[in-house]
Image (tube, rainbow, N blue to C red; front, side, top):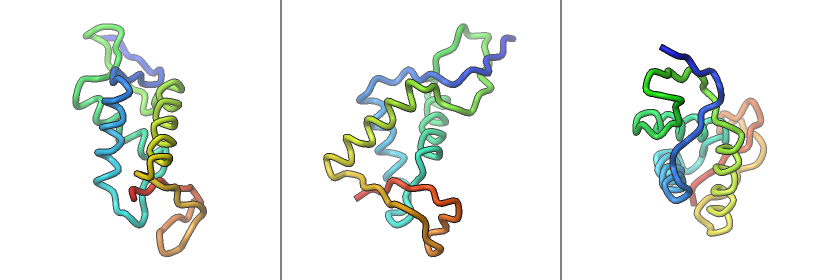
Amino acid sequence: MNYDTNPVQLLYNDEELRERINLVMSGRDHTTGITFVNLCYQVMQMAFQEHQVKKADENTTITSEELSADDQVRVSRILWELIWDHKVFLLFGRSELLGLSNGEDRFVKY
């Protein structure tokens, strides 16, 4: 068995990735939203379940829990398109009510 600790590369095309982002966003509370890091992690978990992760071969086990830089850019671009289309907005700063103790901004579905 081979092990790959490199960042995860997704096999989704842009439309499929948009659908997965929308699916993750629709399952989140409309008040607290989701951080970029958590969104990437959730999309990556879906990709593993759907066998949409690039592997060197069938004997490779991926051990990384981080998306590749290219896929993070793709997620970012799609998020900004969703913001432009008024599907998502960005909740800035932190709030004790929202439990944002680390000050991370969150994406929230309209």
